[in-house]
Length: 421
Image 1: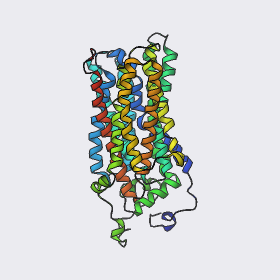
Image 2 (image 1 turned 90 degrees about the vertical axis):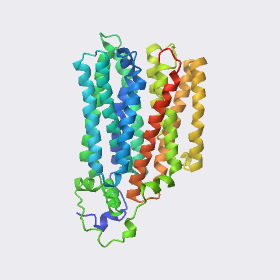
Image 3 (image 1 turned 45 degrees about the horizontal axis):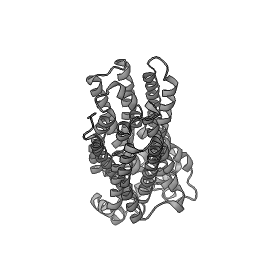
Image 4 (image 1 turned 120 degrees about the horizontal axis):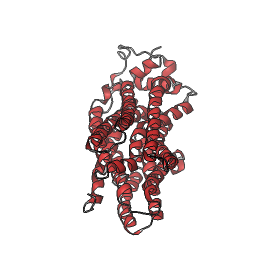
């Protein structure tokens, strides 16, 4: 079968596999961040092993430059990169890195020390590279498919945080009184994360490309001039031909350059940048180190992380209700800028408020983060051809990662003058 088959390119009356595709996208989203969220969620364990090294802040600061630098390279070469190989490389790297984290802890018997800390930092750097491969590749790929797919993927990203937080609370409770219980809980936790990464490799390689609805959208993107989907179409049994566009109107296959896409969507790109600058300047470093001591004791930071992740997940389903989905470009910018009011709110709550008010603030932080992320990433690609949507998806993720990196760097401002520094 070739992509010149008009029965494939024309819009069918019924696209089969939509709900299966949404489930697969959700799981792939889960796998895209479960490794990194595992690192964040076992922060209490690393604070016990490396109390002087600010693990939550340092590991995040190690992760982000590698993710951002890799994403810059991938965006520059986006039009010619094989999306299938890119995503499979990313998921495989996630699997190997998470497994390496487990092996490192077993090999060192959970010992602290600078050498082990450097080893963990190296694995975290690999997480950053894998994130750039997978997140940019998946968002670009799903940007030219139905909006429900990218929404499900983004919900999966949030679900990885909620799930890892829930599992961490369960493992902490289950092993709290056991000998070396904290470490045993972490080991079980990392083993579960490794399994999810392996599952994502199988789903993306053998299940997702064969869904009828996915084949339709990728065939349509290829017909519009996309070169990134050829391997995925081949995996689904659809062959492309080198001469298939010889008689096609050249103007039809023209696509906007990355520069034009950037300037046409600069407000959306700025929205994502600012959303994650604000979020990462508070989460997770501030929540681990700057919220003081409360009745919940060692559970406090874990509860705050879990609350954030839960409300971030809930918020990513809210835009499915069209009446309350924010589509206005000005509205999105106003909502994004208004989130910077969180900075004084968190400062004064940490200094004068009790844990109840902090939990409320963290829940609103998660709600606004998840809601605005889905609104921007589902609205921005509309109206473009497949290759342009793929390119714009990669640009959006690049700005998201730039925001993450900037937020992580700004997070250190909270501890200037702090005795712990």
